[in-house]
Length: 376
Ligand code: SF4
Image (cartoon, rainbow, N blue to C red):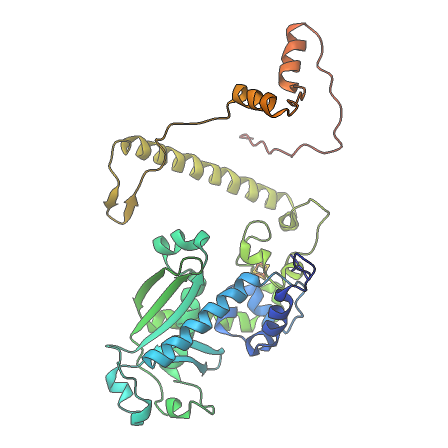
C-alpha cells in the first residue's frame, strides 16, 4: 500500500506533505508505549522493544481522522472550556487524554481562572473517535471495541491513581492529585456525514486494573515474538493490513500463498485448523437458518423501530433490464455498427446438441484450490 507521489495532472500529491508532517508529530516519534498502541499485544511489544517498522502503510484515512479530531477538540476547548489533550503518565503508559470534564467539587480546587464555565455532574474522561460510514452500523450496534475500552481505561486508570502529569502548562492540574473518575464516554464521529454517537459507561477500577495487567504482560515479554498476535493477519483483519510491523509479524511466503500458512507446523496444527473450519461451518449454517426463518416471519411487517433495531425496506419497484431490441434499433438509427461478439455459451450448447466436443484451451492461470472436508 503506497501513497501516490504524483496526483492526476502531474502535480506532486498533497499527501506527500501530509505524511511528512504526520511523521514529525510527537506521537509518531514517541517510542514509549501510548494507550493507542495497545490495540494488539504483539504490536505493543514491537514498539516497546524499539523494533524498526518494516512497512509504510497508507495513512491517509488516519490523517483525515486526526484533522477532524484536532479541529473538534480545539473547538470544545475554546467554546466549552473542556480540558483537551492533557498529558497523563504512570509506570506503564504515557499519552494524552482527549477530554477530561471536571465536576464542580474538583474544579473548585483550581485557581478561579482555570475553572470550567459548566462543570460536569461527575468527573468524566472522554475519548473522541472518528469512524467511516463503513464502520458506522457496527459502532451503533456494538459500541467501542475491546481495544478501545482498554485504551480509555488505561488513561482513566492513570488519572485515578496518579492524576495529570506534572509538566509545564498543566502543573495546576497535576496539583489536583489522583482524580475520582466516575464516568467514561466515547464520542464517535462519522467521518463522512458528521453524525455523532455517544456511549457512556461507569468507570470501573477493576477493568482499569485488567487493562494495566495487559500492558504489564507486554512489558514482561523478553521477545516480541513471544506475544500472541491479537488479530488473524493480512487479508483477514484490516488492522494487520495497515500495521507498520506487518512484514515482521507475518514474514513473506511465496507469492499467492497466504501468510497464515506459517501457523501450521505439524499434523496436530492441521487437525485443529480442520476442527475450527468445521465448527465455523456449523455456526454459519445455524446462523443462516435462524436468519432465513426470521426473514420469512418479518415479510409483512411495516418499517419502524422494534426494540433495539430499526426495520426498513428497500426495493419493491418495477425491475428494469437492458432492452436489446431497442438498442439495436438505436444503433441502426445512429449508424453505429451493432457488435457481433460470438456467444460462447450458445456455441457450447450448439456443439453439445450436435454431439461434437467443446474445444478447451489452457488460460495460463490456476483454478482456486477448493477445500473439501469430510468425517475421517
Ligand atoms: S500485523 Fe496484526 S497481529 Fe501482527 S503486530 Fe500488527 S496488528 Fe498485531
